[in-house]
Amino acid sequence: MIAVAVTLNLVIALFCFFVAWRLWRLSKSLGAAADALTNWDHKAFKILNQDVVPPAILRGQTGTASLRLRYGQLQLQLQRLEQIMAVVGYLPMAGRWLGVGGQRRRLGRTKRR
Image 1: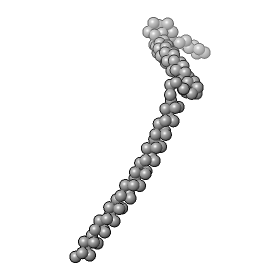
Image 2 (image 1 turned 135 degrees about the horizontal axis):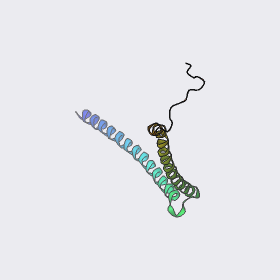
Image 3 (image 1 turned 180 degrees about the horizontal axis):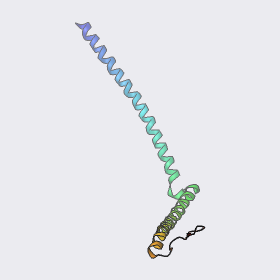
Image 4 (image 1 turned 30 degrees about the vertical axis):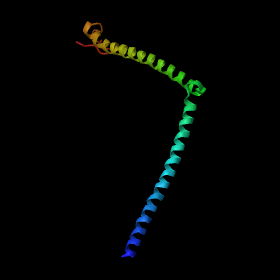
């Protein structure tokens, strides 16, 4: 009976040691991940700090702003061009409606009597 109790206690103790070892490994992994994220946060803050913005980012921001302005101007030009093309598309129909074009003359063939 004592042997069964000792064996059962040893099994429980081994299981508890295994769980403790796994938790210790997990804490080491989580600590390393936390350190990596902290370092990344500090580096990102240094890079993106508004007081010390790198010149490349400033050039990119000004280039993007000018590109957006130019894109807006091109959109207006495209809209005007589409309106002009719509009016030009109606010209043949308007000519027929007004009778400007008249009938086509037959070239080369005349009626013989």
